Length: 303
Image (cartoon, rainbow, N blue to C red; front, side, top):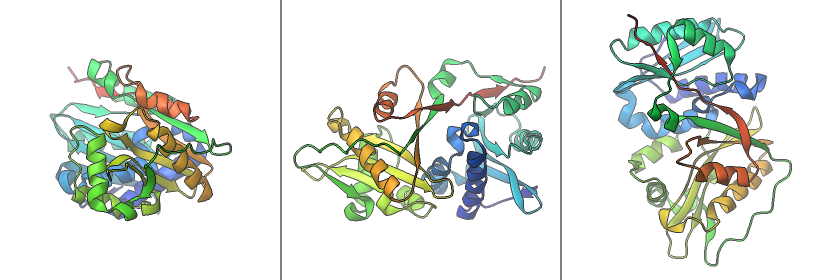
């Protein structure tokens, strides 16, 4: 076991390395919080603002990472974790560390709902499925599709055009994200954190520019070259340009670009909440299908 203090981009690469190993063994063992792209996005955008409330640790077998944990402290303590399927007992140590690092707070974690070994070990440590209404809204579905057969990219409306992050610059990138996500606190500092976190590539940061120069839609693709898998995270369309087919065009444009770079399959995550059906419908409309779902758990206080 190695205790880490400062949480660095190198640490993210170690986490992503284990994620790549697990994905190669069985993609269905991944959950949406632990993919290469999600780790990069979550760390990059939030590190400057939230690092003081983060804790992380690695577990090794020799020089090989076999498990890691990432705690995010707030009103509750939330654990993101990944353990090599060949070393399931490491999860017991991860959960013990989680409890010791966050006494007095509700303990929450969100494993893959099909990983029976992880679910059994959570139950043994006093966790149960969180069936609260809030938990139901936060469930996430990870989706995947092959890039073998892709539709042609539809023509954009007159005056719209595809762009990359380098072409439009940081200010436009940030404003495009904020316009797509109500209440977003994304800043140029957030974007700089994303930009320097591997495997970010500016040519995989795609946007659609409207005739007036507004960024009407945007996404980042994260390419796991080892597994020939790319991931969309995030995906968003400006509130004034929705229902015009821009999201569909952007996703197909991105998948063609990912395939040309060597990717063979694509990932994207979405909410399972019935109050937010549009993203899932969009992704299913371009060929994605469910790989698995997260299953939020909360530790039951001991009596």
